[in-house]
Length: 205
Image 1: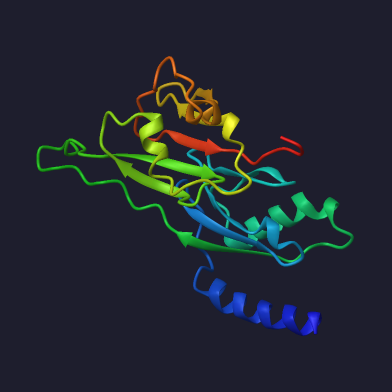
Image 2: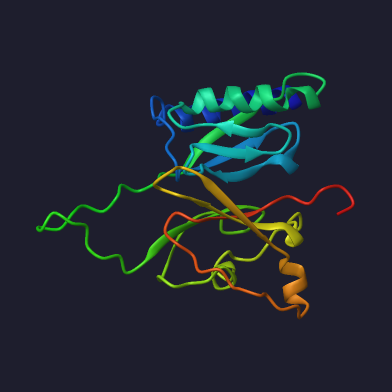
């Protein structure tokens, strides 16, 4: 029965993947990753501005410029050591990063009424989100749709890339302490391209 299920699932995924054949992954894309042998690993992941995403056991997976099939292979290789036999991994593109807005007649892009940030990790609304300029980190978290049961609320990260140098800066907050009444010295104002990462809890955390 299990072999029949895997065969049928492979056929279904094949039809879904056929429409994505040749597509190259870009930053901002949302990918659905399914591991047949361990459903707890199934999740949607956001491709970060540097072209990578994080996946349990596999760590950081580079996806920019790869096809869906190549990403499947990379994830499979990354997690295979945790299984007795190579697992069956399926990747589909759930959401494609929209193209950047075109310039106005004067040659400059229109002033943005919103900025785009990204939610990644153990939140219910993973992916890009449009927010008003001036929105703070805590305000933005209210748009994440809540946290999963695996969220490490003491280690929520804000990742920001300097467009001039490419350097990445990481700030970390203890959201659990704040929700229990602790004060945050400074509520960080978000900028376009910021990534809010809610990591997965470690064992006994």
